[in-house]
Length: 382
Image (cartoon, helix red, strand yellow):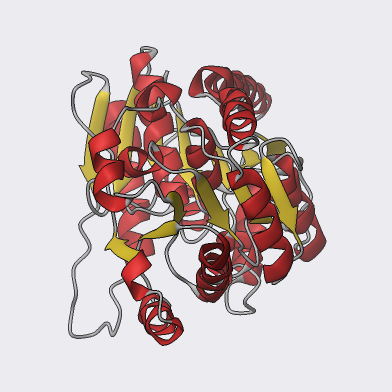
């Protein structure tokens, strides 16, 4: 199968999932063509079935903002024709689904029919897509896609709730490559951070308000009043400076390290004891799954798709958004030396259910169904 994958080439969840999916498909023998404005951060070229096509969009004095959507649609048309693609899979509705619709209509005029699968990842529906400036286009683009998937049942529900969607949405959850996240022995790394055997707690995110970074610091402040502990904050974003000041004001800045963006996050997670995700909203919680794959139990809020991943009292605990006290109590319970081994074992066991080897066939089967349906429709119009 020849598949075009369109995504944001960033550290964000949708770009990571799209890139890892493409790499896994390539290993299975499919020809995968990435179409985006720069090389995805996790894309390597160690497989002969992987290709990258850069979208070139230029600024002109006439335009205040470069028209990326038009350049993307044109590039899709070019790649579909030149590489004879079977299917386009676009990740994140805005603007990829609408650009794919435009490309599809252009190709139709030349007698080329290309089915489009759109995967909804979260903020394209829960935040940006709801904006009146985008909602009509998002609704239209989803309805015009040949196939639509979402990363959780909660996101599917929310999509139907806030948009006038007239088509089925297939839930295919996010995944991880367990081989990549297999726990690595990095005792020297942990000793450098926790020289006296302190508990090591980790948080990773893009440090936006929705991640409730202040809660992470507050929970840690409460934990380290009871037991010796250290906190690693991985990522960057608008809330980082506030969190650094908060840590300083609380007198715990010496116990917290802000590491910025990290490519090999699994190396840090592999030595962690607990992962904090007190987010206001998570459509799936990919960072929590990555932690669980490294045998790290999770303290999270009970919002969005997190209850579909984090099993209460088994892989960790969930609390109401903003309930710092409950999250603190649950953290201390997990970190007890008699409880921690059980939670670590359960976290890994749960993560195995989301290994790429289990999820990839779901995508392949879905592609086949969409292609078969597209062929039927094409024949009926002839």
